[in-house]
Length: 344
Image (cartoon, rainbow, N blue to C red; front, top):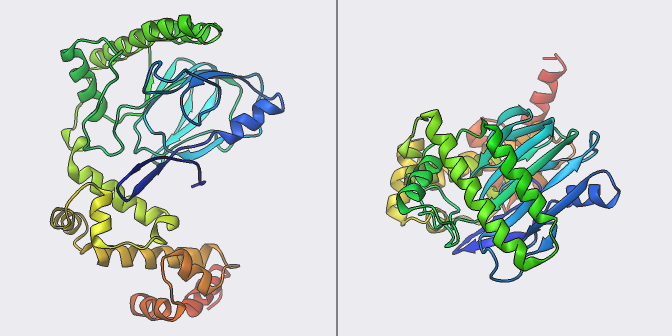
């Protein structure tokens, strides 16, 4: 996963989002047209302070031909809606791959890693909105901005549907396309005072249409998706999948704080999910990742692999690796190479 600008810190955890640098480079060389407004580090023009708070980014790009860039795996600091008006774009979220077609809407939550392009973006006109609803983990309460004027009941219903169903791609009605087109036209207006009022109206319409779309599908809601266990599952999966996280100096207290839990509760969830204590699971994840790196990165030394997986001592790493795999890291790599060559 590519590194990017820190966007949110909570206790021991720093959340990161894509900086859209590949998109900006595409704009600079004239490959793609971009129009966007927002707050923070996202591309486009800045919304004035206090205007439409929670709107991190809203805009569209128009790529008239296949691109030489894509947006690698990333998360956003809010819920993200994207809509493909025309063209074709590959999209992936949490390991699922999709070929978006005109009329497709994607929905991703802040904890869902996603990618646009495979690896490059195809020709197409893509609209997006990133709205910060104050959550970074599934079990946190959503806080909608005050300018969203849905009734309390409608807002609560929309929240439940977005919390308890994580289907990432939806085919939507023409009304949604028209709404995104109107938002795009609003972004082209230069006067910020007119823009903010028009945007507020159109964004309210967008979320009303989203609610109606979800209602019409009679979707299955899984309450466990917003539970504490889900937060721990995602954290443990991240540990297993990202060596940059394994390299950090974890304690049980720090892991629990990362999930917003106390040590006792976090440890209980970890044992329930993995049949191991947090430290046992961490060590297993480090050694499994080290074994993968020894296979996949033959240029990396054993010491480099050890450091990347969170071991400060190559000697201790070799000892722990031998206990797990019954051979040294060097022998494991040699055995894997010999097996791949059909020898032995």
